[in-house]
Length: 111
Image: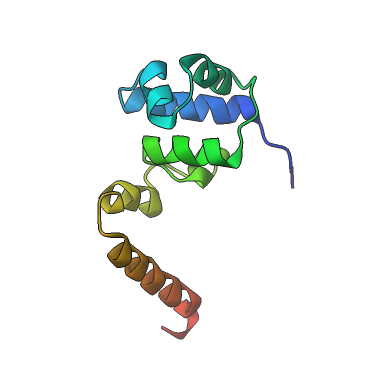
């Protein structure tokens, strides 16, 4: 298993999602409290992201971090579809919902 992050591919996925969300580099940078130049470096793969920055970008683009990091996660993945649905919901209810899914997943072989 390759343990290196391909920052060029990561940047490409960020750029694709930014464009599909109809955001400019400036708009994404503003939402993530980053400069547009920093977003440009990230998209070209010339800047290594911190976990915090990766999290903020994923949140603003409405995708999971794993979607951005791994090519194997497809855009129509059910978890990616849940992100925008749950985004503005009450945190307590979202936590309850996600805990319910976790319990079901842990017991899937018993169903």
